Length: 288
Image (tube, rainbow, N blue to C red; front, top):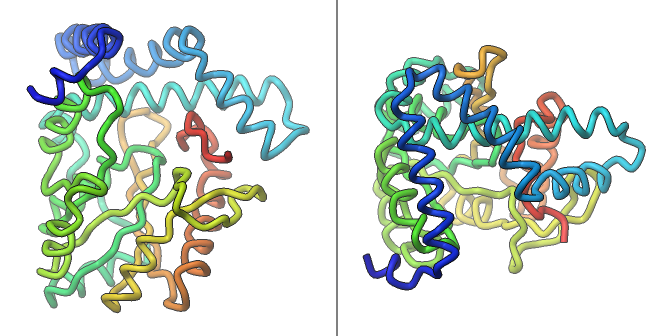
């Protein structure tokens, strides 16, 4: 309640609209709910909020020759995936039951299994791609101890139920900047912790992403080096039916130094995004 008490009137209004929308959506069957949320985000929320313009600007930055029709198609897909992901998060156990049996593919799976069996920590490299809660659910189903770092929302009224929704997918969660000690304790106990690396970080390093300079946090690589543990990228790629996923654990990033390892994460994510342009969150102000 303390965080809600500090919320502005605007925060409360937007939160009320969001809560009302989710209440209505939860009255619908699962697949219809997820589809309608994607439609609403791409056809209503995007155009009215102005985020379509940010997606367009980001796409033109990385490719000034991109056709207007392609921009429109990617923008629609990005907002659709965003809307679906929100509805999935707030579907809680229904979402978990829908995706938890998704098989985990890729060369990183053997490393995850070995680390889990040995009680050895793993640093997971996470990105705003597809739906990261899908791979969290798949890892939990396999019996892995998985934690994640999150950034508290600026909207104080929204933040409380947003965090609770993430907890219903699985715990523990660690607030960035304020729960670092708890995260380190969990990691050193043999847990796996997911670190985001694809948002602009004021204290990050200027690396390249889609050929443009991008401030990038190197904390995941730094911690993997410090603890001498695997740094494993993982993705959940939404499938054409709109509600199922492929979960892929990539091979560990070879240890060298934090900058080169993080650049390798950027390069790998770029390759994945280029194959699925509508599934990365182009809404971010990634390049500043």
